[in-house]
Image (cartoon, rainbow, N blue to C red; front, side, top):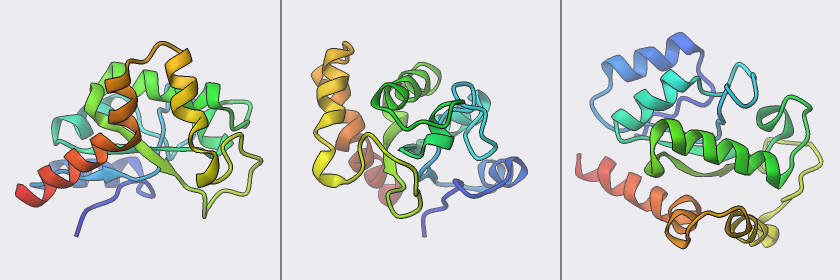
Length: 148
């Protein structure tokens, strides 16, 4: 069983970090420094998640992406950039939360996912960084977890 901290309180996150022996995941959580939602990760949490070999899946819900509550590709990229800066290149994946968000989303379903790598490329991300965020980091996380 993979521990998922996306719905935990800050104290719950700390318990998983302190007591857990294996990598864990924040399946759909963003950066609290970018958007101050209480379910987003603080910079300290991002570092601790990375330290344990964990993964944070970017949530596409507007309330988790930006203070104005809008779900835009620009806000997704701002969260990705921040999380990579704080936790490193391997910390970020895709979480979407398509089944839990009722907002109007710029990327509203899987058939629109190509918009993200295209926008990341325009924003200056390398092909390797784009591949990492879109799928490789999730694969690496699962390998670390199952081999650990």
